[in-house]
Amino acid sequence: MPESTLESFERTILPLLDDAYSLARHLVRDEHDAQDIVQEAYLRAWRHYAAFRGDDARPWLLTIVRNCSYTWHHSSRRRDTIEYVDEEHGGGFGLQRPTDADAIESSDRSELQQALDQLAPEFRETLVLRELQDLSYKEIARVTGAPIGTVMSRLARARRHLQQALGIGAGERR
Amino acid sequence: MTSEHVRDELSAYVDGELPPGRAMEIADHLTSCAECASDYAAMLATVRTVRAEITHHRAPDVLRARIRTSLREEAREEPRDTVRRVAPGRVRRWRIPWNAVAAAMLLVVASSGITMVAASRRASDASVAEEVLSSHIRSLMPEHLTDVRSSDQHNVKPWFNGRLDFSPTVPRLEEQGFPLLGGRIDYVQGRPVAVVVYGRRQHVINVFSWPASQAGAARPALRTRNGYNLEHWRQGAGEYWAVSDLNSAELRTFATLLRRADSASAAPSRYAP
Image (cartoon, rainbow over all chains, first blue to last red; front, top):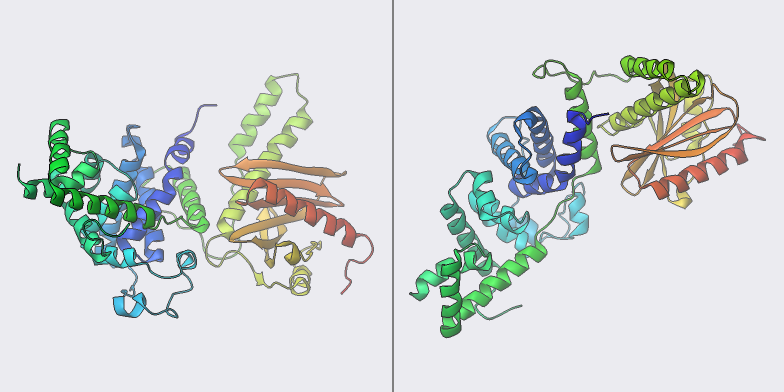
């Protein structure tokens, strides 16, 4: 029996769920928002699956997730998220939200996470697409809609910021 | 070439994203300029640290299930832009894939080698599996898992009395790592069935049972569908399906424990305290 469209979608796009969710989590931080965004993104991906030409599925899906994240951010469906206050959550040990399964894995918000949170969205997304998703500059340009030169300079600036925040001096640490 | 220019490009140099000629120039420069070399080392250390420590979030199973369900709903819709929501309420009507069943039957008639009975049984097993899986996935949505939520078998078991014309077995398997979560009534093949819900780490196991329409025991048989595992067996007078996204080995262990507990309790004292 030939493969149905749904089967083909489930074979190629569904396995990318962790990547999609990870990107959403880094863009919006709140786990429930991230779940809603990813679900929305998958529905959109499904509706536009006919237009997907079978080239690299990951950048294609991540583009949709990224766009959904921004739409979500500007829409009223967004939950009233509690913004993290660095002083409050960075050092306080009893303040972890128990609903966050990831809090169990990494018992505290890491130094790196705090540094990432300080980045403006366009810098953070570029960095996450590169370091977490391992996309090429060309793919990042495609996902974010920015020229390659902009990708390059955003990444350089984001890394400089993290370098300082993590206290990595020239020739020191690690 | 000035050091300032080089510093701007070290990030892209680390990624191997510079044109080959330019990358060579920078490589040469790094051998002669100590300041840029130490800048490069720091950039490299930063990239390594970030890559090692950045959180890879794993999508929760519930999200996976939610997406599968909504995709299925969407795929069924003919005009794709009309959005149908899952009907609220506990009692849900089931769509039996009659056309699939009919097609299977037709195939049977056409191929004379296979007996009618065996093939229709297989087709109906497949459609039961499909319904059981849909029910499992639906149960993972918020507030759908249990009608009676309790880790105590003496709460769960009596709850079914009067709601069903049979009594499912509800053994305690907590010590073996499968805590009881509760129970609910669902519908499979148009009849109410008992669903006893167990947990395993973050996984949910739904055990469906109803009186068997065929005589004779059947050993557990594993099916895998869309990443879910289903164990199906027949024991005593009951038909059982256990469904989970748990790996097949652990689900088999669970099914074995359940069958053992079942055969131990079923015979002498059904309503023993």
